[in-house]
Image (cartoon, rainbow, N blue to C red; front, side, top):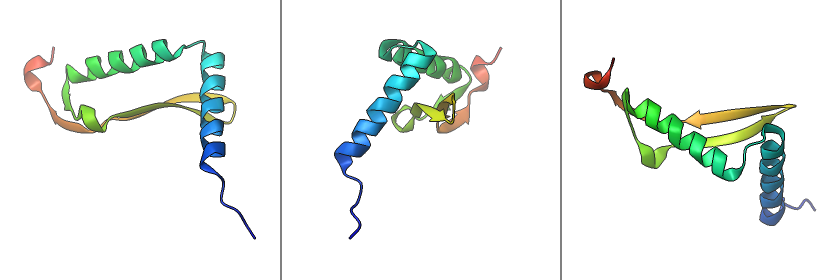
Amino acid sequence: MFRKKSTSAGSAKDRLQLVLIQDRTNLSALDLDQLKNEILEVLARYVDIDRRAVNISMEQDGREQRLRADIPLKAATRANRR
């Protein structure tokens, strides 16, 4: 009776959300990648990061856009602290 949401419909919805977020924030995909890389570079100055497990995404929460970051930390590096 009830059908599961098709994966292509889910993918299309995700792509549309990304397009809307990029339009509202005026960030291109290239700008978003650069932002992610710069965030990771700054954090890496202070703590060891498991870069393979990093997940940074733009999400829509109602009418607001959110940059959500899940960045596993290994340990603080005191030698680089200023």
